Structure formats: structure tokens, C-alpha cells
Length: 275
Ligand code: ATR
Image 1 (cartoon, rainbow, N blue to C red):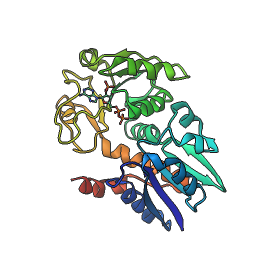
Image 2: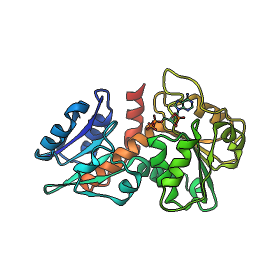
Image 3: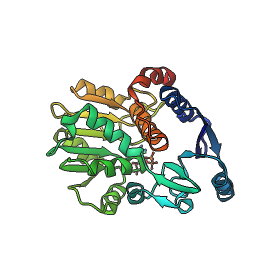
Image 4: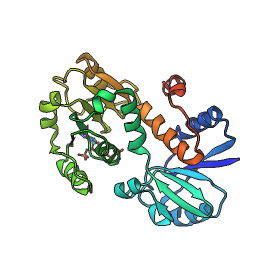
């Protein structure tokens, strides 16, 4: 019996147990996925007791993605570069940390839209929070020629670009510049919290898009944000936030089980769950 779980605060409404139970059923893995909601003041003590427990692996969410690092025995290179861990696997009595946040998403994009991520192409990330940072690192490892970041607070975009050890062509933009230049990009990824239900705003208006552009929004409630609806009117191919959520879970599940789970068969059931 595999014992998995999630640590974070607050996490009662997390969709992770549902996703991982579906993946266990799909892959014929017997196990459980439990929520460990840890109050910030109890973090040290709870983590130590989890380390002595029989937990085989767990996900880490807000606000502990950085705080977990000192408790790990090993950390995967990409998680180290990001400075954040969202997946931990036990190997005997050691904990190894990974970050699947951007990787699962970028993998699914390359798989579905190879044309949008090929060499010579340009990507734009809107927003500069933790999610944007993960996606930026994952995109910087693809063959894309340029990955720009636009944010309301431009300094946060600059910081992400400066922190990245490997150089890729990147500029930090403000939101006005992003709106003006959107037509230059093959791939646009909206990572801000703007447009998350009940908010129906868009972070920047879409005036024009390049022919064949792929547009993603990592907001998954609603599935079809106003940003995606406008992008569709301009002829874009759409990539949805709930697919990213599934992909990063699939990636974590692969790390724990060495199976080859698939996200696609879960998509329509997941969409029903989000309605
Ligand atoms: P996460 O870790 O989930 O990415 P975050 O770190 O809180 O979340 O980042 C939220 C992102 O949404 C940031 O890019 C934020 O912009 P700032 O860095 O300027 O705060 C962006 N954001 C939130 N509300 C916004 C708004 N009303 N207009 C524009 N950007 C907004």
C-alpha cells in the first residue's frame, strides 16, 4: 500500500486527492492520498513526525514550497534552481525534493503544440509569481528562442530573469508593453490571479495575435476565462489551466511510482468536477 499525501495550509478544498485516486485506479496502484493541513506554527514539529512516518511521498503547496527545503536530504537540480519544491519522494529514510509545477505543463504543451515551442519561436508569460517562475524555468530549457515576462510590478519580472543561471533571451515588460506587443508571440501564458472566479477581468486586453498563436491561462476556475475567450476570437489555439493542474500531478505520480500515467483520460471527468 502506497501512502501519499499533501501538505499545505489551507488545503481542505484541494483537488489533489481526487486526481491521485484516479491515477492510482488507472495504474492499478493500491494506496491512499491524505491531506495534512499544517498550521504554520506547528510546521517544524509536524514535518519531523511525518519524516518518521510511513509516508512514501507527498506534494507540497502554499505556503511551504520553500520552507520544506531544509528538511530534505537531496534536491533535484531544477527544484534547486527554482528554490521551491512541490513533490517529495521517500528513498529509504531519506527525502528527495522535486518541482513538477512548470515541467508537467511545458511537457503537455510540447506534446500538443510542437509548432508553438520550436526553435525560433517566442513566448510571453503574463505575471511574475511562483507559478510564472516555474513555467519560465521550464520554458527556458526548451528550444524557444525568447521568453519574455510581463508583470504589473516589473521588478518581480526582472528578478526572475536575473535569478536564472542559464541565459535565454528575455525581457521584462510592463503590462501596457505586453498588450502592445502581443502579436509578436507564438505562445502566451497568463499566470496572474486576474480572471479567477468570480473576477471576470483580463490582465491585459488582447488587441491582436499572431496567426497560429497558442494561448494558455493557468486559472482553472472558470475553465474558460475571459482571457481565453478573447484569445479564441482572435483565432488562437487554447490550452487550459485545469490541464496544467492535471499534468503536474501526473508528473509527481510518475516520480513516486515509476508508472506511466496519462492525463487525457481524466480530462472530461475533471471538467465535470470543476463545474
Ligand atoms: P502565484 O504564486 O500563484 O503565481 P502570486 O505570487 O501571488 O501567485 O502572483 C500573483 C500574480 O498575479 C503576480 O504576477 C501579480 O502581480 P504583482 O507581482 O504586480 O502583484 C499578479 N496580479 C494579481 N492581481 C493583479 C491585478 N489586479 N492586476 C495585475 N496583476 C495582478
